[in-house]
Length: 87
Image (cartoon, rainbow, N blue to C red; front, side):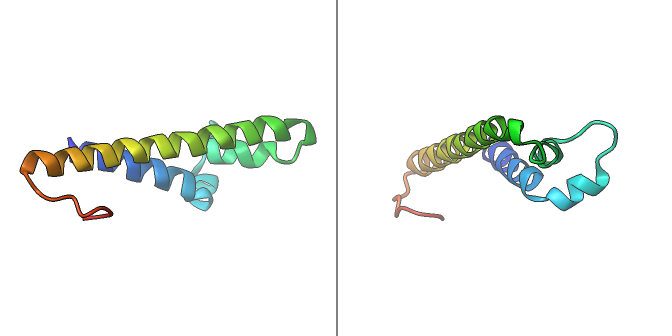
């Protein structure tokens, strides 16, 4: 389970971070980073893009909090001492 959660977090981060790769490799269907980039040209779409950015930040924080919860739970199950911070 920790491997699945960590791969979810890494793939989510990389998919949003690597805009250049998504821009060059995108086919007919736009990915989320290319969609956001294409909508920034239209002033009427700016509020929607800002709301989408807020949702993405909130989703990132929630995923990190879930990952931290499982990390602390795993340490507690093993009987280790949580020193706070990363392992």
